[in-house]
Image (cartoon, rainbow, N blue to C red; front, side, top):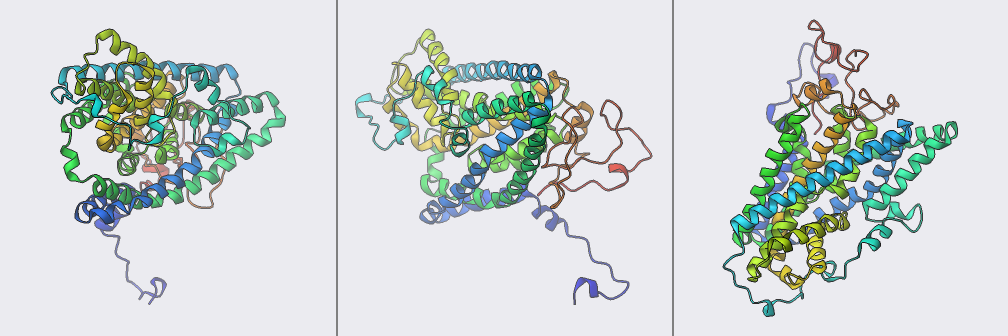
Length: 491
C-alpha cells in the first residue's frame, strides 16, 4: 500500500534521529573516512587499489572550478559597477594575504627551530637520490618573470581548460572590467553569466553527493599504501606540524575573527561539512564552490566573495606556508646542515613566491618545497626523499588550514569594505539561519550585490523582512523564518 493509500486517521512516523543524521553530508563523509581507514588497514592492497575513487571525485570537481571562478568573479566585478571599488577590494585582500602568509611562515620557523624534529638523524647526503620522487619535484622551476608570464593564457578559452587558477583569475578580471565598460551593451551578458553560475552550482550540488565515496577511496588508499606504521615514522615532524597548524588556526585566525566581531569556533562548525571533505580527499579544491555559497549565505557580498576567495586559493596558502618553513629546516637538520638566521630568512623570502607558483598543482605543498630547495643552495633537492613517504599525512593539515584561512580572509575583507551583514553573519554562525541548497527548478535571479545580496545560487535566502540597512527585523512575535520553519541544513 502506498503512502497515499494509507488508512484514514493514520499519521506517518517522523524520520528517526539516526536517519536524519545519516542524511547529513558531514556525517556521510565522516563514515567514508572511517570506513576507508578500516579497509586500508584490514586489506592494504585492496585499499590501495581504491585510489581512483578519490581521484575521480576530485577530477569531477576540478572540471567545474575554472567556469565557477570565471562566472563568479566576472559577475561580481560587473555588478559592482565601480572599477575603483574592485581595485580597493583586491588591494586589501592581497595585503592581508601577504601579512598572514608571512606570519604563518614565521610561526613555522620558530616551532621547527625550537622542537628541532630533524636533529639526531645524521643522514648522509651521498646516500640520497631523486629517484622515486615525482617529476614535478625534480623539474627546473621558473623564475619570477616566467611565473608572471605564465599567468597569461595562450587564448581566452585555454585558461578555462587548464589546471592553473591564476590565468582564470586574470581573464575573469579583464572580462569583468570589459562588461563594466560596455555599459548597457554588457548588461544582458552579465545577467546571462549570473544565470549560468546558477546552473554550474546545481551541477556542483549533484557532484558533492559523491563526496563520501571520494573520501572513502582516498583514505583507503592512504592507509593501504603507506600503512598505519607510517604514521609513527617521523612522528615528531608530523605531530609538530599538525599542532603548529592548529595553533595558527585557533590563535591567529581566531584573533582575526575576534577583531572583526565574529567568533572562530561557530565558523568552524558552520563549515564542518567542507572540512571533512578536505580531510577525506586531502585537497581544498572540492570545497571551493560550497565555500563561496556559504560565505555569501553568511552575509558577505557576492563581489567580495567572488574576488577574495578564488584569489586566496593562489595567494593565501597558510597551511603550505607553515609546511615550507618547517619542511626545509627539518631537512637541513636531518642532514646536519646548520642554517644561520640570515639563510633561513632568505629562504623565507623565496617561499613567499614559491608558495604561489605551485598553486593549483596536485600535491602543491610538496612541489612548492621542491621549488624552494632548488632556488636556494643550502639544502639539496634530493633530501625530499626523506619526507616524501609522509607528505600525505601533512597534506590534510595544509589543506584544512588554507580552507579556514581563506574563509576568514573573505569575511575580514568584506567587513573592511562594509560589505558584510554582521547581524546576519552572527545569526548564521549561531545556526539560526541554516544553509541549504536551492531546490531544483528554482532559478529566480537574485538582487544586486551588496551587504544584503542574495547569498548565492547555492544558498537560500530566508524570507525575513529587512530594514533599510539590510538587517533582519527583530520581531519577537514572528516565528522563525518569517512564519515558516527553518530549512534543514544541507546534507
